[in-house]
Every structure is written in C-alpha cells, then in structure tokens.
Length: 350
Ligand code: F0G
Image 1 (cartoon, rainbow, N blue to C red):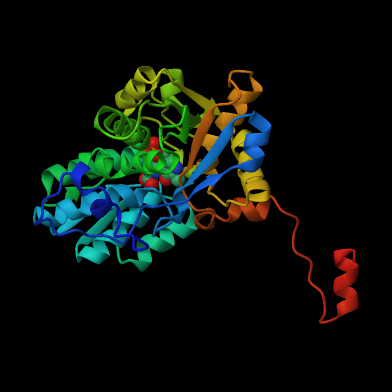
Image 2 (image 1 turned 90 degrees about the vertical axis):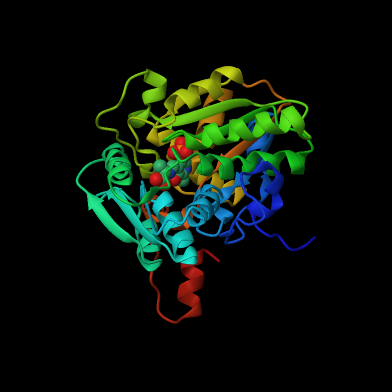
C-alpha cells in the first residue's frame, strides 16, 4: 500500500511489541535504496546506497529511537537520557517530544555538528555540554540511569538494536535476498550489531537465503576496534564516529568474524574524498561520518580485495545538512554580482 505506517507496524511480528504497546512513531524507515552508478562503475560491482538520512530526523537513529521511546513509554518512564555525538540526541529529543517525555542529552562540548545541536534544542531537550569526549558522556549517562529515575536510550538499550535491525529487512525485501557485502561506518558499534542481527534473523526464518560479509569502517584517529586498544583521545573530522571505546565492541567483532567480514580504518582525507564523490556523482549529500562506508569500499577495491560482480550495499547513515561546514569549506567562495545579466554571464563563462 502507498501508506507507510512506520517500521514498528511494518515489522511488528519481528519486534518485541504487543497489541497494547503505545507505538511512538514519526513514520521512520522505508528509506531509499539508491543504485550507485559511479561506485558501481569504479568497482565493477553492483553497488547500492541505503540512504538513512531520509529518516525523519535525518539519520538511522530514528529506527532505534521509535523502539526505545515506545518501550520507555510502555514501561511508564517519565524521562529518558542519552550520550551522543549528535544524531542520537537529535532523534531522542524528537521522539521524546512526540511521546511527551522529558529528554536529557549529554554531548561532548564543541564536538557536535551545529545542525544536530539545533535539533536537540528545538525539540526541547535538556542539553548539557560535557567537558569530555563521547565515552565520558556515555559513562555519565549510564551512571545517571542507574542512580536516578531516567531510562537510557543509547544503543546499549537492546530495543535500539531491535529497531535498527529493520534496515537489513528492508534491504532484503527490496533486493529479494541479502547482498554479498554490506559496508557501514562504525562508531559505538551499535549499528553493525543491529544489521548483523537483522540479516541473521532474515536468513534463519525469513526470505533471505544468505548473509552478507559485514565490512565496518572506523575513522583512523578513532579506530579502537582496528588497533585492539581503547583510544583515549579519539580524533577525526567525522565527529559522529569520534569514539574511543565502543560500547558494542565485542558484538562488532562477532559480526565481523561470523560473517567473514572486516573492520578497517579510513583516513579523514579518504572520508572527505568519498563525501565529495557521493555529492557530485551520486548526488547524495551525506554527513562526513556516513562517507566512511564508501571510503572503505573504495579502499578495499583499490587494494584489489573486492571481487567484481558482487552485490554491495553501503549504508550512508546521516543527512549532509546536519553538518554543512565541510561542504562549504571544500568549495570555492561564492562570487557576488550586481543585478546585471552581462555580469552574471561573464562569471558563468557563458
Ligand atoms: N554514522 C553516523 C551519522 C552516526 O551518528 C553514528 C553514531 C554512526 C555512523 C556510527 O554508528 O555508533 O552505531 O557504530 N552516532 C552516535 C550518536 C554515536 O551519538 O549519534 P554506531
């Protein structure tokens, strides 16, 4: 039907809800799976982009948040809390507003994109900037959720993972089966955990006959899973994945190993190059962290480790409008002209 009821209704039988659960939805999900013409040409594979920036608050977090806020409301919570590099706080603020819950968010001071800060504020969240990094914020949020009457809606909350796994269902529902390879950026590692759970469930008792190899990519300055060591001072321009001690670290290793996949690092330069390529050739505007999936795919292909002819899905996790600084700084400054056709034509080289 042309009406999309939101992912909880769409996948109700595969989610922990009952008839009496008060569903809180902004009709998230059903995001476009866009054929990537240039990436396919470059890699010799059939590449698709799962465009999660098309969700209501502009990132994949809405999939987890519809479930987490629905369950918090069902359990009678009055308030929710999260730590965030920006997108989780934007999504939590919106869904909490929808449910009439108080929302508290802890963000690393000065290290979240302006659009995300704006979203948390406009939806009425109580926002605290913490003098520390994301990992410090998450430790603080967890402690508060234990000591005070407030529920934690970070991805350590299993309901978040349950919601986010529906992205895999959608991909299989569109393609008819799982892809051969699935690429995605990795920060706190909740999303790679969720996708892997979704693909496993759909191959166990659903329409999928196979599972993809899971390829996760961290930013080189924030790549604890790649190096095997906590990063005390994570650093990357991709602020969304500036995380040194991922909460779902061991689950990400399970996804990698059980799928025969990989978790590698991409440099900020590679991320920005993929970011521009996506915008200019595929016409998909993502935030820098989202481009890590594509940067990683191109890196593996350049190393000769991507067999042509495979079907590949790259999740691009967040909308470019959230963090426009990199779009502007990488482009020539706009020229100002008088109201004059000849002046315009001269500047345009017409
Ligand atoms: N891409 C974007 C745009 C993100 O915002 C995040 C995480 C990720 C990728 C990585 O996903 O953490 O599940 O491995 N953002 C979190 C936040 C940490 O607070 O918004 P992950």
